[in-house]
Amino acid sequence: MSKKKNNNLTSFGDHLDEEYGKIGTEARDKYEQEYEAFKLGVMLQELRKELGMTQEQLAEKCGTTKTYISRIENDASDIRLSTLMRIIRKGFGGHLRLSVDI
Image 1 (cartoon, one colour):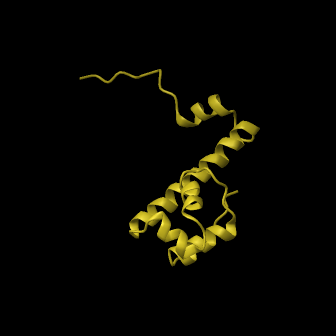
Image 2 (tube, helix red, strand yellow; image 1 turned 45 degrees about the horizontal axis):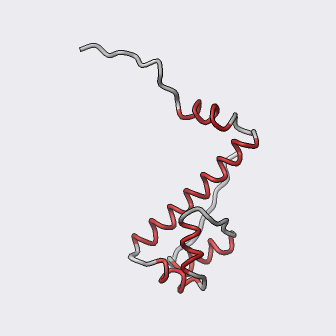
């Protein structure tokens, strides 16, 4: 059986360049920022579910509302660093560590 090369394939990086522009352009920066917010929301939702908590239970532990937790998890809300730290510390009993890639 021979393998055929598919010349119609595009790498994900090339796709992003085509759809949003090269890294450093306004549209690409906006995409990257929104993607990071999306990842954060998914991460918080997965942590909450792993701990067997409802959005309401997490909100109560953090001193916020179920609606706000839902908005964060569904990428509809920017989140302040202080709020994120409070969710991780009070809601999950964890510690937030940040890193910067340059």
